[in-house]
Length: 385
Image 1: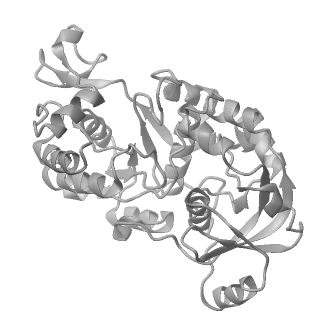
Image 2: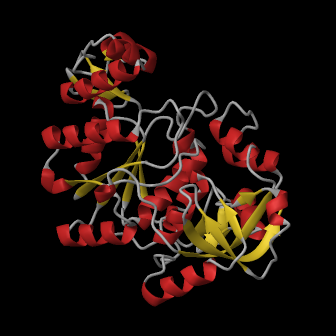
């Protein structure tokens, strides 16, 4: 059976039918704010239940609890505030207790916010608590420090879903749960990725699949860093890999339309909770999960799970060591399973891989499958990456 949603029930804030028609008419007469793509993805996540049990943007009390205790309230772990920051000039025009129309970055009415509170968070504290740094070279810090100073809180009524590329793979939690039920999967493991899957990642997913009924390959497709590989390229890589190297009856590809925050260990907990809402029972956490630069230790995303009662989180983390191809055993392995020294291990830096791709060179098959490499070579040469 798929896991119970976080907080006990799957949230759905997306209006339909007469309720939608009435809300659209109401929104046309309301004061309006415009949000960026980052906030628009968060609205979509709240609407579809990805962020269950949240029904809207968090208030100051909830934010304080998350920062101080890593819980929304006792028994409900949560590690990253979901906030709606706006400029003070925009906030001053809005009255608490009245609804506000939200226009998204695509110029469309996206939601109605039932404004219950305006508050001013300490951005430096927020960054330090969530990202572990206030260095604006960190992409999450840079984004946070660049947003408005006032946060708006309240429940949302959402008027539209956010369309993205490969929409046929953008299954909301209610649909993945139904798919797992139909397939008869009781133990479902999710794999988080924002990159093409190389051989080490393939190894992790197949180790996990040995103990589960099904694997959800669940790439993040919200906002990412500008130098991350584009979503359309990644999707072609995932599809090529699944078509050639995974059993069709035990793997499923779907998208997770959530922003990448690069919050390391705090984000690992959030990614686990979100996959719980999608119906997964297990979640793979590898080396440097959701990391960027040198801001986090290699296995900080493993250690943070020790700070929680796993019955509260409600999904089982599968903590994997760094994996590689071993020339001694002629197989994928990790330090836990393979003897020998570093000289026996096939490692390639991201810089080296990109150089090879630009030059039209195939990385060794011990690193990546040739079908994936060909897609990446085409992309790298066309964009001079």
